[in-house]
Amino acid sequence: MINLSGKVALITGGSRGIGKSIVRLFHDAGAHIVFTYHSSQTEAESLCEELRKKSNSEVFAFQADCGIKRDVQSLVENTIENLGTIEILVHNAGIWTEGAIDTMAENSWIETIQTNLHSAYYLCREISPVMKKQRSGRIIFISSTAGQRGEAYHSHYAASKGGIISLTKSLADELGPFGIRTNCVAPGWVRTDMTGAVFADKAFLKKIEQNIPLRYVPQPEEIAGPVLFLASDLALHVNGEILNVNGGSVLCG
Ligand code: NAP
Image (cartoon, rainbow, N blue to C red; front, top):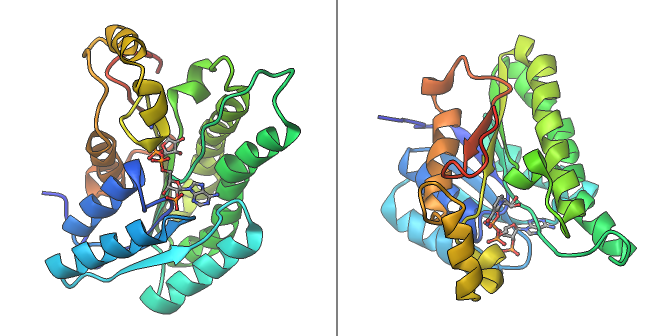
């Protein structure tokens, strides 16, 4: 039902986890894709190989640290060179580390804000002129329940994801008149490498599941679906929305 045939999507953090599921789903929907990886070159190459066997839609992997301005500039230039334009941006790349506010290394704070939030600024600064010119576009950010309710011992992460939510609302207002829809998906816990270590503790996993009304932690595919919806024409009048995908664990509007 959802058809992105011929659309050009740039997806960050596509080598693993949620981003990888988004790349697969968008490719199945017919989109041409450039996705980024940071250090997982082998995973990125094998994803390209897998998808190229399935269809003729273009798919390219690009190495970039999304928290570095020059990397983002090269990424956007390269995408436009290869695919002509950018119609959909999904900014999914991110990191989650632990630290008490009084003892975490300053670099941990800076790296988290740089990777999760400055990246969004760099991407939108480069891509919004392209979308403004074509008077259409979709920007979809991945935030987190941490950005909505806060998260003890992950204050840097929560601050970065809260920033993403405010950025979503600001850009929805600012870029809406140009036909650009800006939305955000806020997942709760998801089974990826990011959470692999904490879920190795089965008692912890059980506690988390008990706090989710649906009583399970989803696979990344269950986040990718709502992202595809926001990129599609089914969501034409959706702008500035924070779409909760958390099994009902955090009930906020
Ligand atoms: P993941 O499995 O750890 O994958 C992270 C992805 O981000 C990888 O593709 C990684 O690239 C990329 N990345 C990391 N640092 C980067 C950098 N500096 N520049 C560019 N790319 C970078 O994480 P995930 O669980 O799929 O998370 C994806 C998004 O969902 C993140 O924004 C995360 O905060 C959010 N989220 C996750 C959960 C959860 O429970 N998993 C919950 C809420 C929100 P490499 O593979 O090359 O390292």
